[in-house]
Length: 124
Image (cartoon, rainbow, N blue to C red; front, side):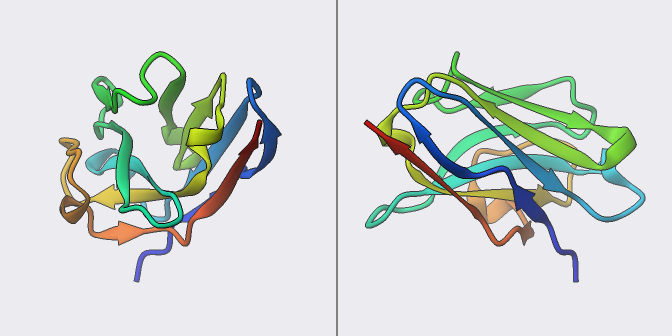
């Protein structure tokens, strides 16, 4: 069983920033595309950002484009989500996910392992 571990969530005021981290076990980190999804209360889980196994390509939802940055650090088997200019609509539980493929996808069923989630709350 692969366990992804997120960290970095918390409470921040509107306009602030947070950086989420996700630790990914295994020795073949570069073989896996990774993504971040989020789920707000009463809403379905939605795609936020994804990055290829090589780290050379990525994609963002329109809601976060130009504010969030996804990256990966192969030496540490970690991916990050830098979130800037946060607003109340960004309040959600954020999940990282691993895909058994180096090509990213924006579809959650494409990912086979998930973290437990980290809460991000943005106050107005």
